[in-house]
Length: 244
Ligand SMILES: Nc1ncnc2c1ncn2[C@@H]1O[C@H](COP(=O)(O)OP(=O)(O)O)[C@@H](O)[C@H]1O
Ligand SMILES: [Mg+2]
Image (cartoon, rainbow, N blue to C red; front, side, top):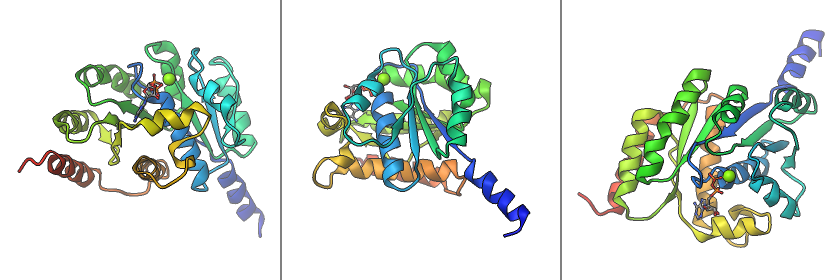
């Protein structure tokens, strides 16, 4: 291997991608999706993965403390130290960092989004959640950061899911995998796990597998056809409702 090859390899090793999970609405599923995305990324071989919790409530941190598995790694830091600590994680060979954020603390969210490569915005298909997305979209636009909406907590056969798909796709990119409201999302996290780590293959786990696969493609800038995907989602939601 010549020196320029080594240089290229070294550069490659230093790439660490940062995903921020943010939305100004409390209860939209930030912590749930942050934990699930981090674990699924690790399970799919995209690791080493690290997580940071910037929410003073510390729900992601509490979840990790209950966890038996040591991966993904959990990094304790502060919003003031975050930028320096990201460089340290990069040097340590972390490939992906997932950052959970607090609701409605604009300064913190802005700082985290400023450091992110991609912003995941969980949104419940409810009028309140849909109305509040504008604020998060504005912060992403101010920082010039790409965002992906993820519909979380959808109910089967609900017209509002279709409306959410339509409304969100007007504001930005929508992940093609809708995450439904299912008790195993909450139950699995009680003892520090995720839906992928409880026994049996579940629809919930499949949704997270598909979600991470999509996010990974976005992060690595692999080509997809988002317009087609939204069209398909719309058709599926329509079928679900038995609307012709
Ligand atoms: N898809 C889902 N199905 C069932 N419960 C969910 C789902 N997503 C989130 N929850 C539950 O909703 C509540 C709020 O979710 P959380 O991830 O803490 O939101 P946030 O971090 O945005 O405030 C939690 O009790 C969580 O277990
Ligand atoms: Mg939270």
